Length: 195
Image (spheres, rainbow, N blue to C red):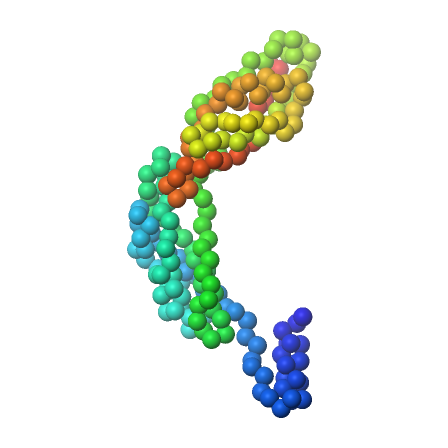
C-alpha cells in the first residue's frame, strides 16, 4: 500500500477516535566504508551515503562491528575494505547492521587459479569421424584445490569421457574466505578442435 495512503488512513483513524497518530517514517540506511588492516582491525571509517544527521551514529555503530580478515591466494592476511549498511529506526537509533563484501578469489576468474592443466588425449577415431566441440563439466573443488565429483553439463557424448579423464587430473589453487580454505564449484571448458 502507498505510504501516503497509510498516513491518510492513520490520520482519519486518529480523528475518528480522538487521538493523534504517530507519523509514519520509513527506516533509513547509512553506508559506511571500513578500511581494515591485515588482522581485521578498523584503520579508517568514512560515510559513503546516507542522511547527514545520522553520520556520527553510523560511524559509531560501524566501529562496533567485528570484521573478518581477508587473505590473498596463498592464505596470507591482507588489508581490505568493507561496506557496512547501518539501518536506523524512526527514533534515530541503529537497529540493524549488514556487512557487504565480495569474496576474494584472485585477480581474475577462477580459471586463473588453475595450477595444473592436463590436455585431453583426442582419439584419432573421433578426429576421423569429424567429432569436435566444447565439453562443459561442473567441477566441485575441495579445500585443497582438487576436483571431486565431476559432472558433465553438455558436450558430445563421445567426447565427454575423454574430457572427464583430463579434468580429473587438473589442480587449482585453494580459495580462501576469512583466511580459511573453502570448497568451490567451477565449470571447466574443454575444447576439442580438429586441426
